[in-house]
Image (cartoon, rainbow, N blue to C red; front, side):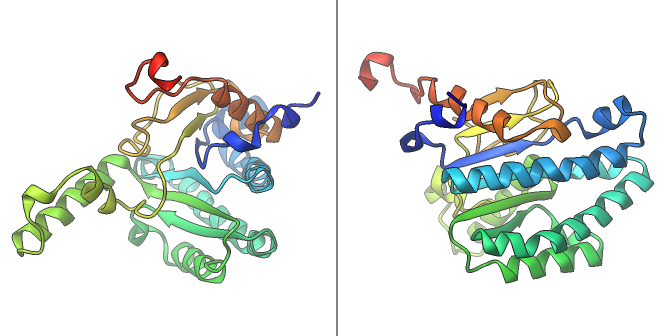
Length: 246
């Protein structure tokens, strides 16, 4: 029995988030520059997106570029931005054929003009698709997002549009860049690192975390299936006892 057939399609996570880690180490193992790893990571993005679409997952969020990534060597950052443009242009046709809508979260204003314009055009060209939403976290930081949400709520309260007493979980969630997107139920991180790295800190409060030693360029749909099977075998209690769930 293959892994895909072991998945219960009635209990799929609605939203899967992925920290795509290990491109640099993968390239180093091949004796190549780090950019080589990023380029080979595109195949993993494609396979993961296609597999999620085929299964019926409604949202897939990929951590593509963090605010901290600007601290990497300039040549690597420039290559990443060029790769972003190339990949988006190459994938728009496939996204539309598969009914995938593209969205982005993060401070997009800091992206190079060409990258930002290409991204915005792709989002516009795919906005009618409804089968799955692919969210790219670009120039993203959870701390940045939370501060921005707090600032937005404070501004609304100061202007009298919002009563501070009405600020609750829902109000705060609605001020985040992921408004309208359900919180991830499964968070996958590749490369064997067991940390969150400033990713969706508010949204993953009750997500199941899955860490795999597989480096991102080697990640294939079978690895995704294994993560989903692991997720489906867990008991999600949300603060309740096992007996209450029964």
